[in-house]
Image 1 (cartoon, rainbow, N blue to C red):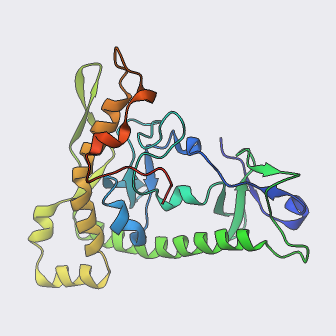
Image 2 (image 1 turned 135 degrees about the horizontal axis):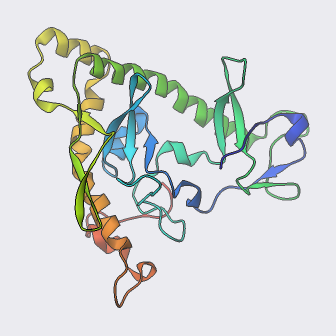
Length: 259
């Protein structure tokens, strides 16, 4: 469970935080939000899709077709891919809206196990300002949030153009195939048949790069299949003993540095 607390001098003055060394905190996330600026790298590593939140579509990275499971995090908490989504890289910090306020404030997950009274990086400087390291985290989160607004406008334009369609994916469960619901993709046929006015409208709203990125990324479903296969126990070989890097071939090396 996440237990977010606003970072204030009264609550966190004199306390310290440590950087995470495991992605175990993301092990149950089968979807994660994405913003447009990370698409050039994300589309090479993840299947991209759209999901519905309320009445609007949201851009997301698909980490598994099974809720509660992230195939990109192994049993040791290592990330099994060449790109880590921005939503995980600021852990245990997040921007959130406090009740009765419209602006976003910096918060920390108090149940992360990364807060200390004795060691780590300080939350605040002696003069009462945020520490330099935490200021860097805040700047990163602000940039992501700013791009999120632009990304959402672009995704909304794609939806308004009628380009969203359900992604007909299936998953094997106990030997039987079952459809996966809740994931949407760009209808490529409709995109290609747009008239000039509609197409130019999408270009001006910066929607086209998102549409093409989603389409290009769909081949990464094969990554999920390979990662899922690697998790299946073998008679003579456990999951921890398998060479995950070899699953993707020499041209697609897996790195565990989070970059």
